[in-house]
Amino acid sequence: MLHKRLVTALAFAAVVGSIASPGWALNRHVTVVNNTGFTMVKFYGSNTGSENWEEDILGEDVLPSGASVDINFDDDSGYCKFDFKAVFEDGDELVRQNVNVCEVSTFTYN
Image (tube, rainbow, N blue to C red):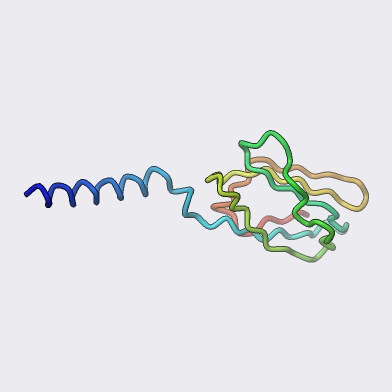
């Protein structure tokens, strides 16, 4: 009888754990599309819990207009909401806040 209660308790704990932290197992891959007419020279994506921008995701690469890049935003933080910052060749910067990378599979700059 004790064994049956233990198995039931462990099964319940597993279910509660999976419901309580659904963000940990979600896909955070997003295709970023540049349709602005300008080359994107830098791109930053930081979870909303971060106080500053992380490193430039493009690094030494650029993202020409009409091109796209697939980015995995899984930073082991469990966050689904990220702020994006794109910097273009003409110096313009576009910031988008609270992008849910667990729900959005494509993000387009127009």
